[in-house]
Image 1 (tube, rainbow, N blue to C red):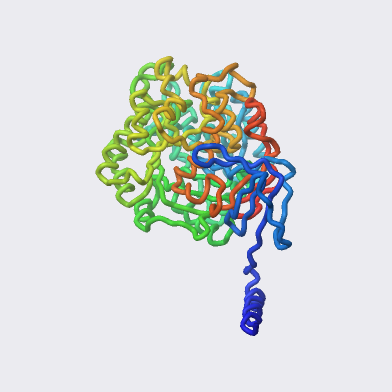
Image 2: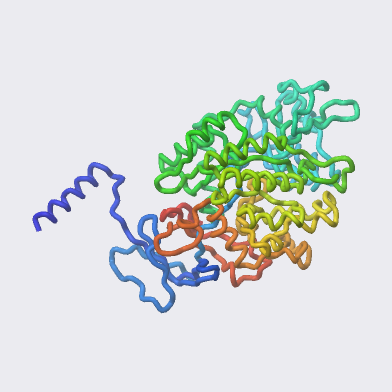
Length: 553
């Protein structure tokens, strides 16, 4: 008895000395429509308990619920509870910056984009550079790239730099080009293009690697500024029901900002980061090895390499000419030899390699390189990935499963691209594009994501697109190339267990089970019983990550 008394005093003393020490408390969420995946089937439950960051038990209607007075009880009011959703491909810093910059998404014309930028500038007079993102010339009546001239009318003396929706093209005004030293004599860099007019003058549009000519003239964010932007972004992502994101391409400074945030317990969602290659000090960073925080909130075990550009800007590398641009095949952003060296170096150092590939030529290059280098380095177990895997030769589809390579795909790209994709690649190549059903039939694993801020980070937009192949106006009637639809279970799995598997985290997240992390989301609507055409309208009530409530409606 005396020993027990001393033990209690010791705990109280420790608590007094260190206010951060909190005795474990169990929480019960009852009266819910719970769903998770067990043995590739949908399992239902009506209550869940968790202590600290771990799940204790799932309960069905027949199970008695715990009655201890020490349990914190939450009434789920019949709402739907799912495992936390995982976005396998997003850009957190860019998303945070998009929340702080001119929003050009869904601008209806070049002039509308200019006017939106001007309105933004009037409310942000302290800025030296005016920056924005989201324009898409394929949605404008002109269907042509914009020019510096339209920006110069309202911005004669202030530099303006606006990124295209996919991040693979940028639009500058004349002041920005003057600061960057861009003129008629400036040559396009390897893997990029400076669009010029009939007189050889830069129009203001820069494609892929050419964008660096402007980017390098803008002062980079400090670590402190990056952390502020990342916190804003992660909090916003949690509001969409995302509990984990694979950040597809960061630099060493960004990596250090995440490490500091994880050490400060300032991350509201989990992040699995990919180092962009090549970027400053990348070799030194890889040599230092992988990183994993004790609470698994931040993980760094992979790299991101860019093989080509995007389809919308005709930067995706194709084997044959673009169907709507004779003589043009897109861009490889690294030579095959350079790409092979990046892949080999990363694999030998034990890093998962995740390569952006949109066009069929880029996808073939990636798969050919992976096949040779996986064999040379014996790294099939690292689960290398193809990011987007958007336009595939039919004969390349079975290679994903054969090589153990994951297809990290974004369903909303299909519904966003449906109005221009077939124009770009024609009726034959389109059969291997956005080919989810063909990949699944060939036993490939699809890890879902959004590619935010290219698309909305809302995972229910992605689930809706996966299941219906339609936009939010229910168009086209039966779905775009409807044979490629996913079932609701397949789509759900791609945003949970398979996305977790793609990050080597399926043992701790991706489904709900005893001992796994307490990451889950409470929804206002039921994904599995509501009309499929309304899935994109689902709203989030609460989000928990690591057992902590990080978002409440």
